[in-house]
Amino acid sequence: MSFSEIVGHTKQLQILRLALAQSRLHHAYLFVGREGVGKRTVALSLAKAIHCSAMQNDFCGQCVNCIRIEDRNHTDVRLIEPLTGKKEISIQQIRELEKELYFRSYSGRKKIVIVDPANLLNLAGQNALLKTLEEPPEDSLLILIAIHAGGLLPTIRSRCLRLSFGPLPAHLLCGLLVSGKGMKKADAEFLSALAMGSLGAAIKIDGAALREKRKNWVDRLGSLHHGDYRGALEFAEAIAEDKDTSLSFLQWAETWFRDLAVYRITQDSREIVNQDMVPQVTERSQIGDIEGMLSALRQTARAGARIHRNLNRRMVLERLLLNVVGER
Image 1 (cartoon, helix red, strand yellow):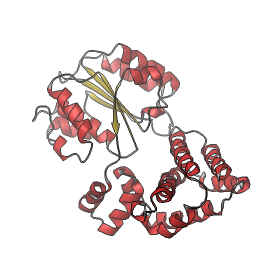
Image 2 (tube, one colour):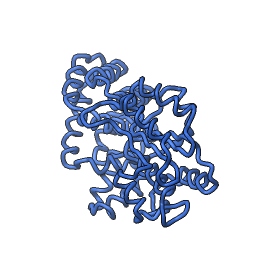
Image 3 (spheres, helix red, strand yellow):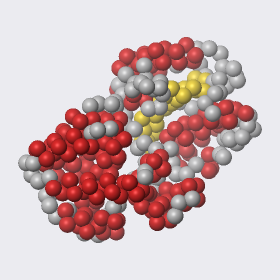
Image 4 (cartoon, one colour):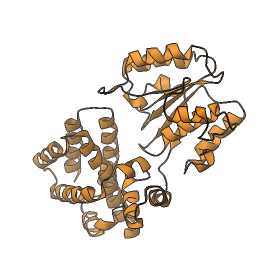
């Protein structure tokens, strides 16, 4: 594998490859974008290109260094993520990586640290990391990966070069699922639409189970009327039982509120993500106003970000659904 085989993110890869070829890599990057779109893949690919023993300014994926980076056991490349059973990246983990960055590189090339997801750095950890960003060790590279930048301190964001990663086009995602995962085209198209450009999300989705859940969610949302605060609280309680269910609902709800707004504006069902629910979308898009649909879409995205930061799921979902019934 090489940079040329990475699907999508052409502009971001072009920026990184040019900086690599000119030996002008920034000391710290912030990769921001939806979960599962390929941010970590690009970060690891950059690390491989820096350390690859077979290619220059690219990577082969087969040499000892590339394999060790892929297996997470390369001496000069560290991946920092929450420890098993922990919800945050602790200050102790940051202090340990700071010490390692000041050690001499074993390979003679850059020492690289990838923090994923950076949103789970606690405040103490972020403040500790700030010192490294302000006075980066020589020949070091720090890559922070985040779904959104809002949970990071402004001082951290200002010291990183930010690259935003958009969703993969549906046709590319569908092709990956067919060629790489052996899916039938119809199933791949269904998952590609619902995953909203995230390969990671598409792979995780259980199509049959999701179809049944979506039917229930549409019925529950449709039954909520203006001022139905009790119904909103009961619905929030039902989907807050575990994190995966909550995130799955919010991921789908983004597509639902998007579809309502898009159809209300265009009256064109071809632009709807939930193609198997066109009748429900066309009917319910006529209820309420476009401002309320767009507001629900924005609030759903924010709710997902809050749950990723491990805020109380029930409170987050209650706030979202109470606002939805309050705006109807």
